[in-house]
Length: 295
Image (cartoon, rainbow, N blue to C red; front, side, top):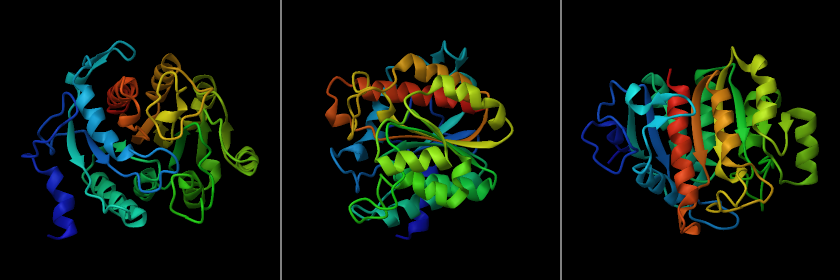
């Protein structure tokens, strides 16, 4: 079986796997496409993020389709859940390449990509495809960690290097980082000097930069560990001192005013959180993203 066939197969209307609530079975008519990136090959503490996409879909069935935050309903938009990208176990570089190829195909088809991770390295494939489609791309990075290392434990392909790869590709002046509260001294110094760096907070600093972003194509990559582990314990590298859900939904309202051309939510490890609060929050964020970004 060729890789091209494997890549195209989830686009087929007969795909009948577990899907996000309200998904259409019509790929051609869909404005947005949800796709999973089930990978945790470089997770450095607690593994399990490859299980995140499936469980986010499953718990979405408990959501209401109406968002009182945005006063919109999933019934008002059309989106297709394409299932998970087939990724080669243990091979991060090839996995990221397959994600890039997949998301590039979504852009060629005129779809808004909505990605479910997976460790944060998966975002590099999606953002690379977005940057090719939109040369003036800006990236909003919402996370507990800087992710600005050139390598981690000798590995250049690591979830700790993803945003540095983005900075090297599009320029650090086009990267906006929010909620950061963990990293090396060198990473913090580099971020303060080079990116638009807003540690510890999300909604208030995001509101201040909206005017400079309003006419730019935006990719948003959202790590679930930006939340305090009291709210979202199901993630591999939890960091105390994070944000709480009301701030996140306020931030989504701000993001809705921008031209968001791609979104991913990463680092959900469902087996770590038997209460399912992390997974439920993640699925709600995907609902909000669909309603905020599908115009």
